[in-house]
Image (cartoon, rainbow, N blue to C red; front, top):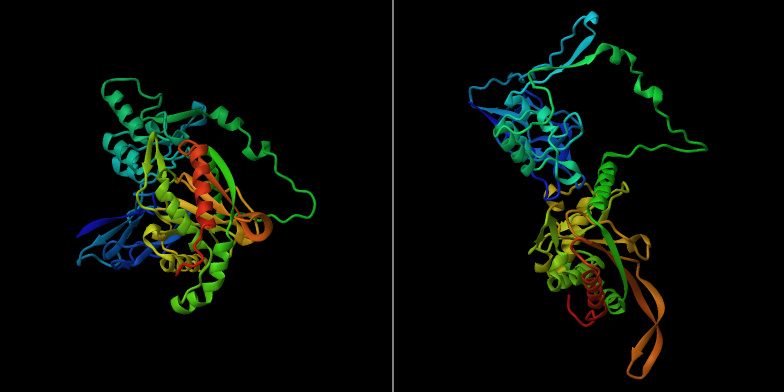
Length: 449
């Protein structure tokens, strides 16, 4: 007989947590290997978590709508032939509260246990909303640092998060007799005078309720829209965005696609859209300018050798998701077209897997699909650049010929690229963008597909 931990799986390089949507199994239920135990969601995709062993659900550690860090134990499964089906979940020890008489003018608010087993089950958001990575929580648990102490450690990470360096420095200072944060011992009670508690007014009494005039409809954001909003705001706070613009004469590309698209669909069984043509040009330019295919980790620039192109895809709900074409540089036009169409269909039908949105190193967004001429896209973290292509429009332009300049009707398109100015300077960003435009302009209209 053994108890196996079910861990919140790693869902992508930039994904640090996931929201529990639904438990499909409850304590006492039997589960088979690879059988789905729960459904989870991130800002990228909804996914299922399968069981890593066969047995009986012994304990569930988080509830629906809880936000759980990657790598955290979310449930326990008891294995062994002698285990009864009616196994009951282990009940969590209730938080004990004690109250003194009013004459003593004090109320004992909370007694915090510092047992390591209880610590490991704490969520990383704590009571203050502060985030702790699984690594920091594990170090704290092994070193006997309770949650009260942890919440008082100054964090040097992003948004004040406690990093590995912070927790190790605190542990080192504590062992050497250094000054600890001013917190009460975890075996003590936190006391607040009754008089102050009784004089507090309800929070709602001082809050101004927002009022709306006129004929309005109030629509609450759905879960995915909230996650997208948080992701976009976090990207703007993380990266200093710069956007460069250029335009390209894509007449040769448009005429070639128009000529071959029927034969392409007949032979390959899939449509030939403009997206694989754009991706092909981007991949060629990334090979020339690899620094746009990277991410930033502190003061280290991580240049990615794999070229994985994310393509922003609009969903029927109006939300957005970014499936990723892995190793796009190793695919020919047919392979790119099939990958693009397969991922787009899976996204629109809600059939994307967690792996389908992982590992992107550069993102393409086609704002021209909806008629927009250009856009200023927001970087998809932890990437450092995103390229937007606008609508292709016929315009009269000046064309240089051996016989002199002339005016002709050409298919023109604007391109824009937002990039992280911490890594990509204006010279590199503009040069890369111009290179992509030149690739599209010099498209070989006589090529085979």
